[in-house]
Amino acid sequence: MAGDEAPRLGRKNEDIAAQVKALPRELAAVNVERVIEATEGFTGADMKRLIDDAKGLYAFDRAEAAPIREAHAYFIEAAAAVRDNKQRYELAESAAQARPRAATLPGFFFGHPSIPDDN
Image (cartoon, rainbow, N blue to C red; front, side, top):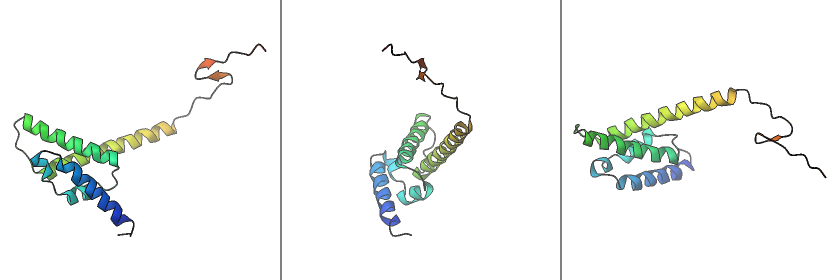
């Protein structure tokens, strides 16, 4: 592990641990180290989405009276969904960048013709 990577992982571990502590007891029992391993490359926004999705999956199981799974299962399922969404976004972004752009016509600004100055 590189020297500057250890503090970064320590901060990530602390951030996730703090967020997990506020979750329902069943979810707060998750092994934070395993969550970090499953979320390599995730941004802070991705991690927020992960936690929100894990809470949603847990709430759905409770609402449907489904058996409550291990905390790790909710986080792994949420991580897979976040990763899939990131890939879809990257594909859409690539496709948008590959599309030809419309040429800007002289004298037009934000789609409105410019008004000539009479002076």
